Structure formats: structure tokens, C-alpha cells
Image 1 (cartoon, one colour):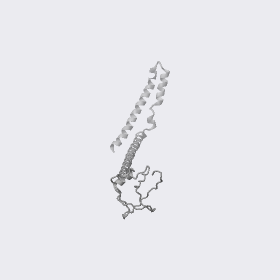
Image 2 (cartoon, rainbow, N blue to C red):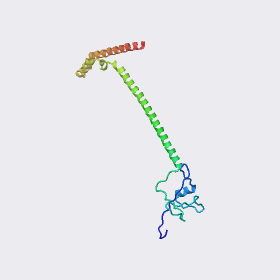
Image 3 (cartoon, rainbow, N blue to C red):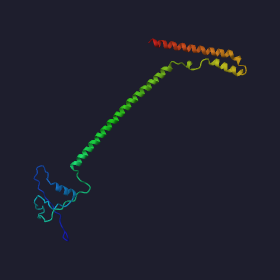
Image 4 (tube, rainbow, N blue to C red):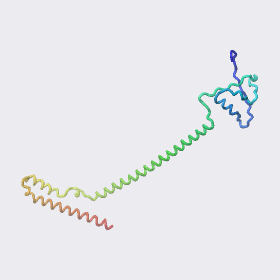
Length: 194
């Protein structure tokens, strides 16, 4: 290495395995991963073969290629962990999708029930108030009421002069009450007969 230039060594491995798999020891795997030099107590088990360029084996051991920067092929265990995590994520996605669908179905059912109750309430209110005529909604005897008010304005200090108008207004109101009660009684009797 000093002043003379060195050339990199190439290693050729003959593979006799029909599956195309090269068997290497755990020690070699560890050295390849960490980039450490070989231990002194261990030796390569294969005999050195001549290089492809025709030069013979050198007395120096082959240097290990540097590990690729930033990328390591995942080991079998990390691949299994990755697969398990992906399965957990898929299961979690499925769980939350089902939960969301269940909540949406419950919300739709609740909305349908509330809409039905709202429509029923509208129908009920319409039934209750459709029989009420416009004449029943206005206070009765408005013309007699106006006469009483006018009489009281003219006779502020002599209110007894308006007693005839007041009596006529009171009789009109009482007749109207009796008429309304008779109408209610006649409506309720056929409904009870059913």
C-alpha cells in the first residue's frame, strides 16, 4: 500500500447448488453487515481460485466491499414485523370504516324518526285548528263592544247611562258562549260513538 499502487481483487465463486443459493456462515453475514475485518481464529473454507484476469491469488485477504449507504435489505424478522403492522393498520381501517357506517346508519334512523314525528305533529296541529272558523277566531259582538266604549267616552262621569249598552253586550257574549259549547258537544258525541 505504501508507494506502489494496488489493484482491487476480484473473487469468483462457483455455485454448485441447483437452487442458485450460496451458503455462507453466520460469521460472514455479520462481517458483511458491520464491515469488520475477519476474526483471526477463523479462515475461509474455500480454497483460493485463480482470478478471471489470469493473475494468481495474492497473499492479502480480499477486502470486503463497503456496505451501501442508507439502504440495508430488511431481515426476515423486520419483514415479518412490517407485514404484521400493515395487517394491524388494515384491521384498524376496517374497524373504523365499519364503525363510521354504523354511526351513519344510526343517524339516518334517528333523522327518519324525528322527521316522522315532526310531520305527525304538523298533521295533528292542522287537524286541531282546521275546524276553527275565522268567525270563531274573532271576539264576538264587536259592534256592541264599540257602542259600550263610545258610551263610556261620552258619559265619563255618568257611567250608569251606559247600562243598557253593557247589558246588550253581556247578553250577546253569553249567547255566543252557549253556542260554542253546543257545537263542541255535538262534535264530541259522534267521535265517542265510533
